[in-house]
Image (tube, rainbow, N blue to C red; front, side):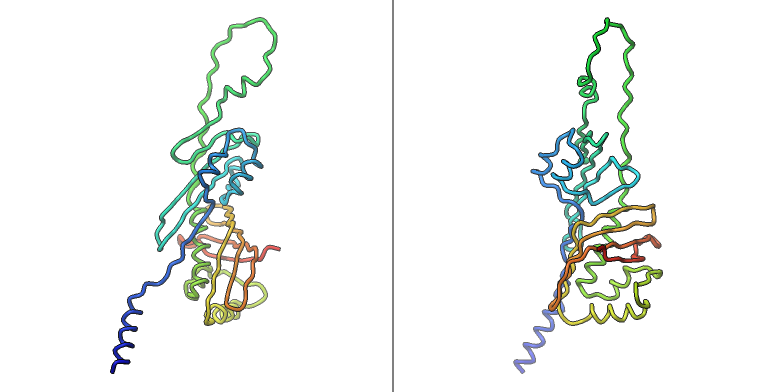
Length: 251
């Protein structure tokens, strides 16, 4: 009788447990020390040395770098950062963190130019055009990051249905049929034991509004095996969701 009561208490306790949700870190985290080292006039190489490579690349604005960061804790976004840098002739000209915009003074360039030795001439006052403000980058790249992280989290949680839901119907695995691939993945993911998949250096490139690629370092660890690979996922936006259409291990 006493054993039955203990077993019943353990059963009721386990029913009240909530599923564990991993903390999800997305993008570049910029510390105050890193931000203090950032100076106008720095080259792209110097900026990359201080802040690292931006995780969001916009092919249509090569002189604009966006450093974005988002932390999800318990399924909720608890911290966000965005830092936008604009370059001109590979020189940092503006820093925008969403609160303060710091720009290089156009007069500095004029002062550096040599002054010709000619007689003074009265010239009409030049009309300085207002600085061109680059439109803010949309959140499509963040949505792509979220989809990739959700795929990795489903893999780590061994939730096969959610894992397969990350793939588009048009996905075709390399070297085998889709049915054989699904059977293989179910056996490996559903195998008893612990699986941990973490992603680093996620680099998202938007090809257009509905197509993107994500390249990252994938660290896989299980009870009897672990490895690190670099992988590229091609994603397509289908009915509002970013789904994987192909995946490739980068050599």
